Length: 140
Image (cartoon, rainbow, N blue to C red; front, side, top):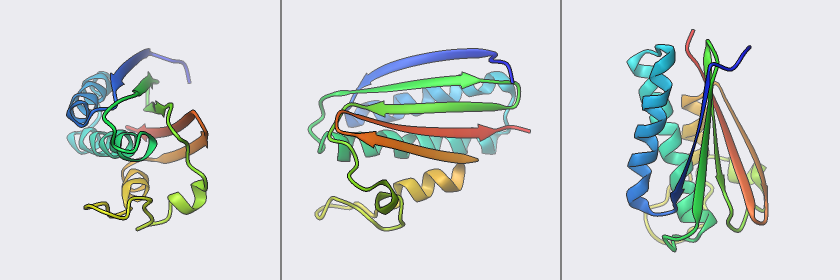
């Protein structure tokens, strides 16, 4: 499939930027005429991914950067969310429902599970200094 359009956004890992990130991605997505439900799905998945960066990659320090790249084809959008934090030691374990590295607060450990529920595919790669979450949402 040929690429119709691309965009890249860099935001600081601050909780107030989570809503901005999901809105920008949703606005970009509407170029390929998704349903309202598909737009809401990608907004939810992006929100979870960005929140994971803020809470886990940077330990909630409200500092560091998050890069979001989107690529549109005729029938899908790929969103890559990258952080430059501490990395994920065990991706398989991290993607299990209810697993969380935060022992205090209101963390349920459902971030990756939610992303998987709302996207057609979720792929995670991680090492110290670079974690990438790749989300794909189809529109046909």
